[in-house]
Amino acid sequence: MRISIDGRYIRDHFPGIGRYTYHLIEALAPLCSHDTLIVLHNPALLNTRYDLSALARHPNVELHQIDMPTFSIAEQIVLPWIARRLSLDLLHSPYYIKPYWLPCPSVVTVYDLIPARYPQSLPSPWARLAFKVTTRLALASARQVITLSQASQQDLSELYGVPETRTRVTYLAADERFRPQGAERVTAVRRTYHLPEKYVLYLGINKPHKNLVRLIDAFSRLTFDVSRFTLVIAGHWDQRYPEVKRRVEELDLQDRVIFLGPVPEADLPALYSGATLFVFPSLYEGFGLPVLEAMACGVPVICSNTSSLPEVAGDAAIMVNPLDVDELAAAMERVLEDPALREEMAGKGTMQASKFSWERTARETLGVYESVVRSR
Image (cartoon, rainbow, N blue to C red; front, side):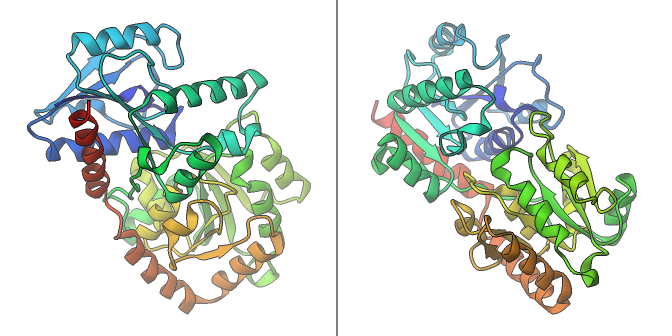
């Protein structure tokens, strides 16, 4: 098979989708040694996280440069032409936008349906309309739809009428680098970012559905015994959503909350490992990979009991109603005050994380490709 994956989403603007796409290709390459994987990419798009040239070291992976951005009308013309010229058997788009007049069948990954559940996560009415139209077109024209959790599969059925026979759930996994780090490495990363010894960690973006204002409120309610902990908020920061920093100022927590911004991939395992607790109070997730990464690093996790997170966390996390600030605060206080509980949760977490692997994700994705190509 000649399979093309649109790698233009491996870039800083799409941290989650980029991670999914990169690790999927990385795991697929050794599994389909008799097939050719053609990765479409645009070097002009900012990518400081992943080395695409490392993918091309696999003998069956080719990088194919296309000098156009995503979300362009031109790609509706150019990508079908490229698919024909490259004699593709299949095109996989890891996002909900894809070419609609391809000479070959296509697979689309719906990473999540956050814009459908939380329209305010998109910046304008035009963006919301574009999401509705392009999503429906992609779902209608794709031969198969991959999604990352049973919760998202149910959303596809409920919101868009996509039958389960046209969808396949392929879970994500924590990369093998995510494992408990030694004290020396943790200390080095802590010094790099000027972090205290005791901190609670959140990693992710700051869009409204991430529920960070309630996290700040819950953190402010911790009693004196655990107030020595600092809350560290790491990840891409979208300036369109200033509410979280404003809430920190309103509660006079500037000395107890640290905003790190984006953290290089190489530092993330130690950043997780150094945390006493990882908290992920999101209202909605397509998967929730940071929960799994924290568990793989041996860190106790508190997360929401909504959407995909119960599938990811299993019984290894304390799950809370993300709308209940008091419940979140009580859970944080309980874990921070109890070393034995933290040790028990850490053990359960590493076991839970070990149930997921990128090889499994790749095998199941390859199965989708093969079934689509056979049925063309």
